[in-house]
Amino acid sequence: MFQGVNASDGYGIGVAQVAVAPDLSFTPTAPDDPVAEKARYAAALKKFVAQTNAQIERMKKTVGEEAALIMGAHIEFAEDEGIKDMVNGSIDSGMCAEQAVSEAYDMYYNMFSNMDDELFRERATDVADVKTGLLADLLGKEVVDLSTLPENSVVVVEELTPSMTADIDKENVAGIVTETGGRTSHSAIIARALEIPAVLSVEDATKSIKTGDMVIVDGGAGKVLVQPSDKDLAHYRAKAKTFADEKAALEAYRGKETVTGDGEKVLLVANIGNPEDANVAAEHDAEGVGLFRSEFLFMDATELPSEDEQFAAYQKVALRLKGQPVIIRTLDVGGDKEIPYLNLQHEENPFMGFRAVRYCLNNPEQYKVQLTALLRASAFGDIKIMLPLVTSLDEVRQAKALIEECKASLDERGVSYNKDIEVGTMIETPAASLIADDLATECDFFSIGTNDLIGYTMCADRGNDRVSYLYEVYQPAVLRSLKRIISEGNKAGIMVGMCGEAAADPLLIPVLLSFGLNEFSVSAPSILRTRHIISEWTKAEADALAEKVLKLKTAAEVKAALQAAAK
Ligand code: PEP
Ligand code: MG
Image 1: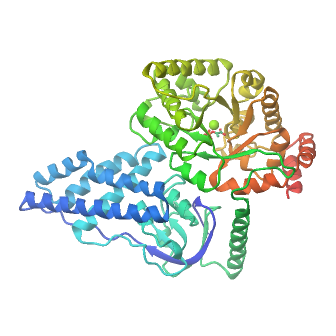
Image 2: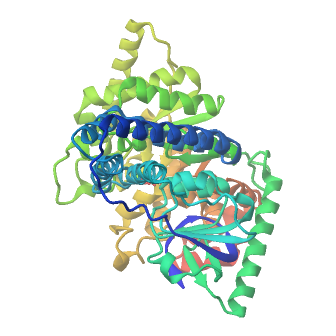
Image 3: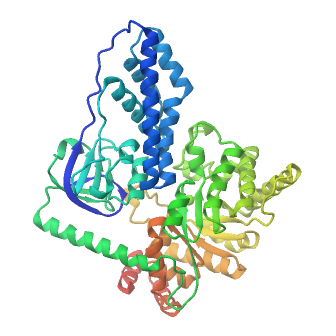
C-alpha cells in the first residue's frame, strides 16, 4: 500500500494506465537563419495558445467556467512579453528555438519551485506545462493524451498537469494517482471538481505501478493499493458502494432549509479560499460563505494586490452568492501563512508573533487598501468583514476606526458601499474567548476558529505528532471555551458561527446545536452531510447529550460518549 496526499474523496477501483511524459530531449544546434527560427517559435506559440483556448472551451463544459480559467495561466505564461523577449533574444544570439524555450521556462520554473509557499510552487507546474507544450510542438512529439482511455482506468502519472486534466476522459477514469502535487494544486482542485477520487504525491508511483495492475484509490484516506487481495477488493467495493449510496441519499437534502429535528433554523455556509470556490460553494448548495480566506489573493501574487484587484475578487464572490451572506476575513498572514514579498522578520515563535490583525493594524495604509476594496464590494452583495486572531478589544476598535476612515474617503470619492456593513471577529484565541462578553458588545458577529482555538487552548501544535493527542476538540477545556463563546454571543444577540473544521464534525454537531451555534461554515463537499446531521437532532436530545459530555473529565470519555450517541 502507498500513502499519498488525499486530494479528492471517494473510492476508485480500476486498472492502471501509467502515462509517462514523452521524451522531449534534443541536441542543441545553432540555427542557420535566426529569423526562420524565431518564426518556428512564433508558430509553436500560436498553436499552443489556440490549443489551450480550445481546451478552456471544452473544460467549461466538463469542469465549469471557473475551473477552466485555471488554464488561463498557461496562456499568460506563453504570451508573457518578458519570456518572449528572452526566447527571441537567445535565438538571436545563436540558440535553436528548443534550447531558447527550455532555458527561459526552466529559469521561471526554478524561481517558482524554490519558493516556500505552496501556492507559488504550483505556478511552477503551469510553467513546466507550457514548456512541454511548446517543446513537443517544436519537436513534433505528442504530449500525454488522457482523452481516450479504456473503461475503469486509474490514471497514474508523474504529474497531472492542468492541460492533461482538461482533456481527461471523465467517464472512464475511476481514479487518479500522481507523484507530485498537494491538496491546493490545480490538479487537486480539478479532480475535486470532476469528483474523481485522487491521491497525489505518491513517491515513484509510475515505477511501482504497471499498466494493467489492479489499483484501488482511496481518495479520502490518501491510500493506494496495488494488486489488492480478494479480501481488500471486497472490502473496498463495499466501501465504494456505501460512499455512493450515502452521496446519493444526501441529495435529498439539496435545496432544503437547514433545520434541526424540531424545526429550528440554522445557517449552513461554506469556507472558501478563492473567488472560484464561490461556484463550488453554490454548486454544493451552501447558503452563503462563512469564511473567505483572503490570504490567497496575497499569496498568489508577487506584490501587494491593488485595491482594484482585490475589489474585483470580492465583488465576484458577492455577485456569485446573489445576496447570500459572505464573510470575508481580512489578511491572516504569519504563522503557517507566509507571504514572501512582505519580508516579515524571522521570529522565534511565529505563531505567537507579529501576524494577522497585529500585522495589519501596524500597516494601516496597506490595511486600508483591503478594507476599502471590501467596502466597495459590499455594494454588490451581503459582504461582512471579519478580523483574524483578535486578542483584545483595542484591536477591534482600531480596525473599526480604520473602516470608518475608509468609508469617509469613499464618500469623498462618491463611491457607493453598504453603510451598515457588519464587522465581526474570529474567536480563535483563549484571550478572545475569555473576553467574549466585551467583544460581543462591539462586534456584529463571531465566528469560532477551532483550528487555532484548539491549538492555542491546548498549547499543542497540530503539525506536531508528539502532541497531537492533545489537539482535540473533545478536550474539556476546548468544550468549555466553545460553550462560553457561544453563550456570550447569544446573550448579546449577535450571530455566532463556527468556521473551523470542527463545525463539520458529525460527533460534535449536536453539542454545538445545544450550545446555541447559529451558523456552521464547512467545506463545500460537507454541506449536505452537515445538513443531514443537523436534521437528526432535536433541541432536547442535543441538550441532554451536551449536559452529559460537559460533566466528563477527559477527551477520551467525551469522544466515547459522543460516539455512543451518534445516530
Ligand atoms: C481557524 O483557525 O479555525 C480558522 C478557520 O482559520 P485558519 O484555519 O485559516 O487559521
Ligand atoms: Mg485561524
